[in-house]
Image 1: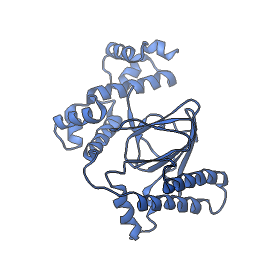
Image 2: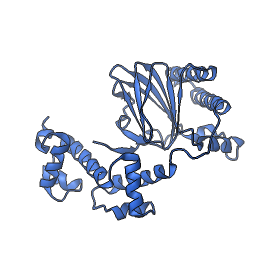
Image 3: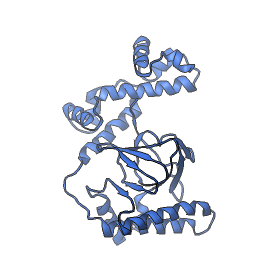
Image 4: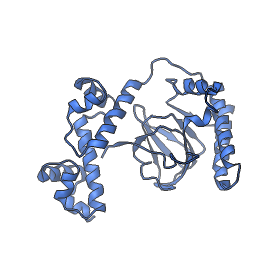
Amino acid sequence: MKQIINSKNIKANTKFPYLVLKVKGSTAFPHNPGFLVMHWHNDLQLILVDKDTVTINLLGYQAIKLQQNQAIFINKDIAHQVLPSDQASYHSFIFPDYFLKFYLTSPAQNLISNFLSATNLDYLVFDNQSNWQNKILSILKELEQLENNKSEATYSYEVLTQLCRIFLLLQKNIQPSHMKGLDKTNYKRIRIFLTYIHSHYQEKISLANLAQEAHVSKSECLRCFHSLLNMTPYNYLLDFRLNKAADLLKNLDMTVSAIAHKVGFNQVSHFGVLFKKKTGFSPLKYRHL
């Protein structure tokens, strides 16, 4: 069932909102249940593959396969999904862009902001094809090693230094472009639409409701969904509700009828038909799998 979520950095409210996920197969340390589904976040992300193959799906782009010792940078607000093979392992480094800006009114502020807004910087893949990319891969391995010394007083300062080294290399070797690329307007609108659905899925949601949230016409709302998700807002809403119902069936001792109403279905029979069509099981059979 397709869903796209706004993922939250579990360290967002700490003094140092730097999250490092060590992932083996489909298990992440620390636990982060949303990392396998399509999601976006307000942070920057770097991924280094330590073993086997990892597939990166980016909304609006073809899938990217990363091999061992390859890495990728994913810009903030770019919807993506990370699918590792069963034997794969990788490290994911997630952090806010202000880590790179030094201080308020710093010359680095505009430099970083302009660089990250480039249309050719939604993502970048790093391999060993050039000297500067090799340097970035080496720095990422140093960041991995730093996780073994988190108790050191200099840990956070070393992390910040290494991240700035990476982005200095990027700015010296990547020519930013502000020419028209992937339609960022669509990206902004789809995030508004999906955020509204995720907050109001239990209620009756009309196409007019969604369009009004982004101040666009109903036809533009439909176009945006078809362009990026290849589905209608109604079908996305159904999928999201059915995902929520599947979670409730497994984790809460509620009747099927109560769950159907809780996720926004007025008719239990209609819910049952849709749920079986999506999962191959009736709600009761799914509960006992």
